[in-house]
Length: 570
Image 1: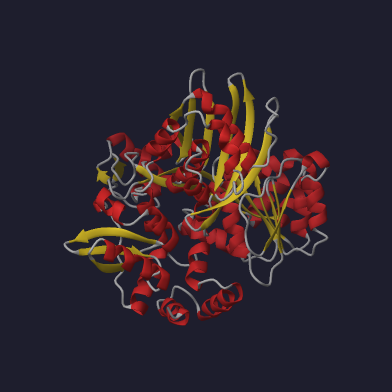
Image 2: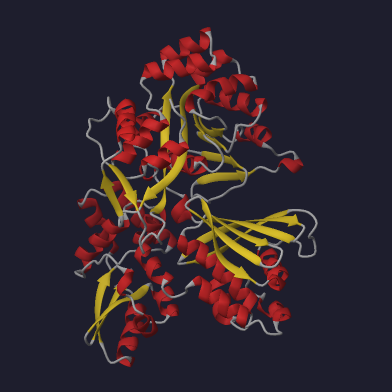
């Protein structure tokens, strides 16, 4: 396909500027990679818009995939290896025609492979363009996790000790599955990692119980048990994961940390591994770091209206701090990466201090702190200031020294991004002062305070609107009546095949965004108590997290019940 034609189609559709398109073409030449793959990797344009542009350029129709019609017979016709290698999958069979979806319909090798399959099955071919996300949905039909694990367990026999024969390329998981199918432990571990990525899980927990080994995945913030394995496989599975993460196999008494990377579904996936000794044996927790789900644009986070404008305005300022607050697991790191992504330009030196580095970002100089050798946030921040930075990201402000250094960096012409543990945005200022930062420095150093929580996004396929109860209607009128006129609808999702009967597909953040103003500076100078700062936030008209959540609830994005559960009363 003519890359220039695709880029021009995206420019004409106003999805890219001409300068962005030219830069993409130059980069694709320099790194020998398709411009469209760069767009997909960085989420520069919505997948569906890229597919529609390709449809115009190649004169091949685009199809939105429904996996319900993909039968076992279709799956047998196109092998999983072909789907993974050529990014081409069966969609349906219409008489003597096999209809396939292709991410790259101009791929000559993929065309040859599909023609061979069609000839072998005595059918003709029909082709649609599909997106990488839809390809992943189809891939899930090929490897039902529980069946894969069950067949691997049944194949254990007496050969468990032979796993060493499969250790040559331990990080090429998909290859390990196909080459070493006589090594069931490798297959169990590989299938578990693959299932976590395909289902969008954030964590894997492998936990020895009294009489079994339990595998759980954290999906949309909730742990769900996905497999039970005989307890005598616990040690081989733990050893396999330790080998992948370069950990000491014979050390079982103390916790260990490691990480490894593999390629799944055509993209790099990082796994962060932590072992933890328990009376029943070592427990393994694996954080799944998938750039497709973890690296997002600001507009994908759930910022909207005044909140979105405030964040974009703060990013345009030449210096100052933007602090993200919230409890563990509230999506602070994802927001930090989105902010860094917005500031990561050719003309800016962006440097980060992280614990640990979760996602690798091109163009950002990322460094992992190591407190055990004296390289912590404070000492790292001192070194960063010698590196001529424009933008500094500090993973977390935990102590007085780090806080003071971050404030002074903001005062000396740098943009500083970081997180801090407080319950709400108004609590950031009292927290910094409690840490020992001089209050008179904050009005000049601090630009924006953001607090957030994550709530489940309702499944679009099964959500339905209904009239709220009188109690909920009164609450909505009290909280958002001045922002949005009633009558209001609330939404519920009972669950369906698309969302695996959960009623939610992914999560979205609810925010409150508190700006530094001249009036807030006066409050800080006089009496920066938590009550006075919160009072100024109200006077400012700050949208509270509850209000932001309820606005999303009446828009059908999330449920009222979850908003009320995640937020405290005003």
